[in-house]
Amino acid sequence: MSARLFSFAAGDQGSWTVTAQEAVTGESLPAARALSVLSGPARADEYRWTLRGITSNERYVERVERDVLVAKQQGLGRPQSTRAVLIPIRKNVEWWALTQDERRAVFESRSKHIEIGARYLPTIARRLHHCRDLSPDEPFDFLTWFEFAPADESAFDNLLTELRASEEWRYVDREVEIRLTRASV
Amino acid sequence: MSARLFSFAAGDQGSWTVTAQEAVTGESLPAARALSVLSGPARADEYRWTLRGITSNERYVERVERDVLVAKQQGLGRPQSTRAVLIPIRKNVEWWALTQDERRAVFESRSKHIEIGARYLPTIARRLHHCRDLSPDEPFDFLTWFEFAPADESAFDNLLTELRASEEWRYVDREVEIRLTRASV
Image 1 (cartoon, each protein chain N blue to C red):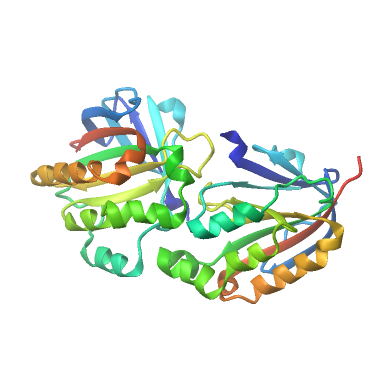
Image 2: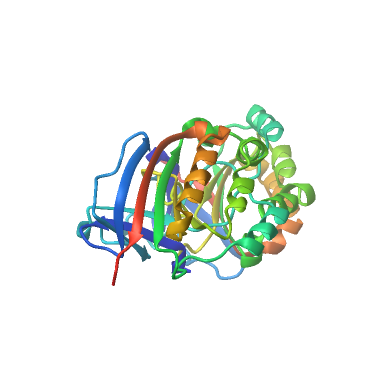
């Protein structure tokens, strides 16, 4: 069960080297040279910063959509996936005050979040981590981790462009983008 | 924001006196004489046991339903509400593997959870706390806290009977019921 909690720990050394960091919306994070993805909690005093998130049940995906996703998706850790991107996101109070049907309508009916994501499978592998209900004081609501091969970076850029143009993204009030390359061993 | 996290702390003394405790499904909790409801975290070493939960966005309620609920419901802490019940619940892996549309179908279309609850408003006041995403190791998924006047205890019993007879309750694999009376000051 503990495999649900993951920590992203930034510092001078780590399994992924930071190649770029951008504050897309709102406040950035302190710059760091490297990032490690840890299963379980991280000791905050050993790193420049840490973020944590927990994998959970899906909040919007319906049965037909999940069947499509499961048939197409591939896991993290593929040898050719030497590029990764961490995108921490926070949504505003207006989003969280919507009811389930209203959020679903923005998320998929009008923003096509699932449909857009599915189009980039299996090229882009991804894991979504929820933060909002870990405590009342988390700096982000979601941490999404993406992995892909170097040749697929432009496809990933297109995915980001599509999602950021969606109605759903009007509710995003903080977003940081951290690009990474797998550190040589 | 910290007002989202609540702790239920059991011991020899507290603002609510335990009048009955029943293990409805699965393992019980250690018996205690009293319970306190605390805003924020509790020091575990000061109590017989503590449970914690966080209020969050609704997972199933739709706009029309919320409007009905908001029009009818009343808050916790009413002077006449000298009876309370804490019901910690855990749902099984089968529940959490369902997609959103499947969970909504069981929750409302077939089990009428929202409709049943709404019928007992404003008599029964309630606050739902989520535990599942606080950490991977929480003993329960939800803690529901109910408050009502002594004369409304039979109405509350009926509410419980209706919900426990629903299809949704087939997914409950641990449930404890703790009945309380407000301690005299």
